[in-house]
Each structure stands twice: as C-alpha cells, then as structure tokens.
Image (tube, rainbow, N blue to C red; front, side):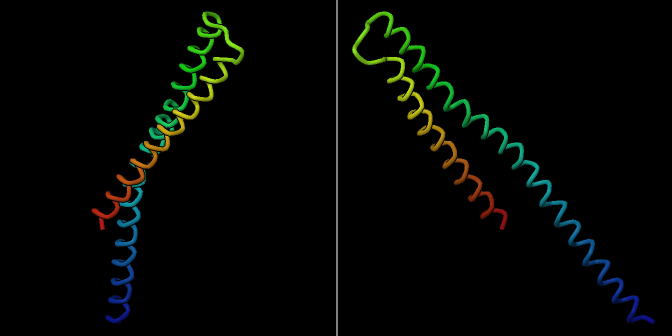
Length: 106
C-alpha cells in the first residue's frame, strides 16, 4: 500500500514541477511577446520614417530644382534602403540581447 502512495506522491510532485516550469516559461514568453510587438513597431517606424522623409524631400526638390530624373523616386529608394539598414540593425541588436538573456537564465 505504501509503495502506491509513494509512486502517487512522486508523480504528483513531478506534475507540480512540470506545471511550475511551464508557468515560469509562460511568464518569460509573455515579456518576449510584448517586446516582440514593440520590435515590430520599431522596425516599421525605422523603415517608414526615412521613406516618407525621402519622398517629401524629393517632391520639394522636383518642384524647386527639376532635373532629367525624378528626385522623388531617387530619394524614396534611398529612404527605403536606409530604413532597411536601420531595421536590420535593430533586429540584430534585439537578437543579441535575447540570446544573452537566454544564456544568463541557463
């Protein structure tokens, strides 16, 4: 009879441990979900702002200093390229920080 209660006690303790580990992992992941949403916003803005600024500056240059090429298109493409580089930088930085946090937790 006692061996059955010990086995039940051990499985109960194991089940509690598993649930606690899942709960702690969910709390860590909850923070990473919010930071992931924040990162998506940061990436979006880091591409959108240079792109819009390039287009606006290009429109102004097209009206003020007309050329045989389009300033708007040229600066729009430059803004997209600059925004892509900035977004790549932010993603790499966040990835490094996430890996460092994982190593510290282990």
